[in-house]
Amino acid sequence: MKLTYAAVLGLGLSAAWAPASAQDAPRQLGGAPVMPAPAPRPTAPPPRQLDAVPAPVAAPATVAADSARPAPVATRPEPTPAQPAPTIFNRPYVMGGSTQPTRYQVGLKNGAVYNAYDVEVKQPLFGRNFLLLDGQRRIELSEVGFYENETGHYVRTTLPHSSREATLRREKTGRISLYATYNTSYAPGGYGMPGFGYGGFGYGGFGGYPYGSGYRTTKTEYFSKDNGPIQNLNSRNLALATADNAGAQELLAQARRYQTSTTVAYVAGGGLLLYGLLQSFRPNSTGISPVTYAAVPVLIVPLIFQGKQAAAQRQAIALYNSGGMR
Image: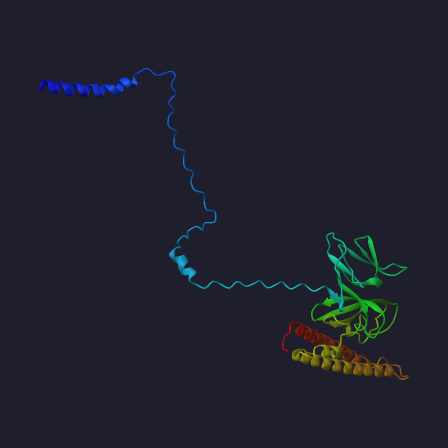
C-alpha cells in the first residue's frame, strides 16, 4: 500500500516538472525563429449610403394641428404696369440727354428730351429767342415742344384759329388742364375809368384801356382735355368737353347766366356813359352830366359777374377732374 502511494506521487511530480524543463531548455541556434501570430486587422465600417432619406421627426401637437389646415394657394404677384412714355398734346417723347444731376426737362418737337439743372429763357435784342441749358447748350425756341424751369412748366403750340406759335404756362393739371399766356404791352397814353384799364376782362374777351400811361399785362386762359389740342376757355367749349358729367354741366349753366348778365351790364353802362358825355358837351351844358356818374357803378357790376363766372368755370373743371357727380 505504501509502495503504491509512493509510485503515484512520483508520477505526479514528474508530470509537473516536465513543461518547466522543456521551457528552460537551451534554444537551438540553427532552427527557424518562431513568428508570433499576426494580429487581426480591424474591420472597416460599411460605406455610408448617401441617398438614404433621414427618418422624419415627429412634429409637436400644435404643428400637427396646423398642418391639418389647408395650405394657402400661392398666387403670382401682379406685374407692375409699365409707366407710359411722357406725352404732350399726343406727341410721345423719348427720354434721353445728360446724366448729370437734374431738376428740369426740355422736350423737343423731334421727340428728344434733355435733362438740365438750369434752364434759362434768353430774349436777345436782335435775333430769335432761345433756351440755354446749364449755361452751355443752346436750343432755339422754335424747336422746343415743352420746357420746365423754376417758374413752372411751359408748352409751345399753336393757338386756336391761328397759325402763330406761342408759349403757354401750365396752371392746373388733370383730365382738363389749364394753360395761360401773359402779354405785357406799353401804353404811352389813353383814357378810361380808374380800375377799368389794367389787364383784360374775362378770358380772352373784352380788353381794357389804361388810365394814364404805363405797362399792362393781359392774361388769356386756355384748356386742354386729355392732352388734346389747346382750346379757348369759355363756357361753350367747356360744356362740350364735360358733356359726360351732369354736375359740371349745371355749374357751366350758371357761368353762362353770369356771362349774359355781364354783357347786359356792359351795354347798359356803356349807354349811360355815352349819353352822359353827350349831355356834358352840349352848348348850354353847365358841366358834367349826372348821368355820367351814374354809369360808373353800372360798369362795376360786370366785374362782379365776371368773378362769379370764372369761379363757376373753375368749379366745373375741378368737379370733372375729380370724377364726382357724373
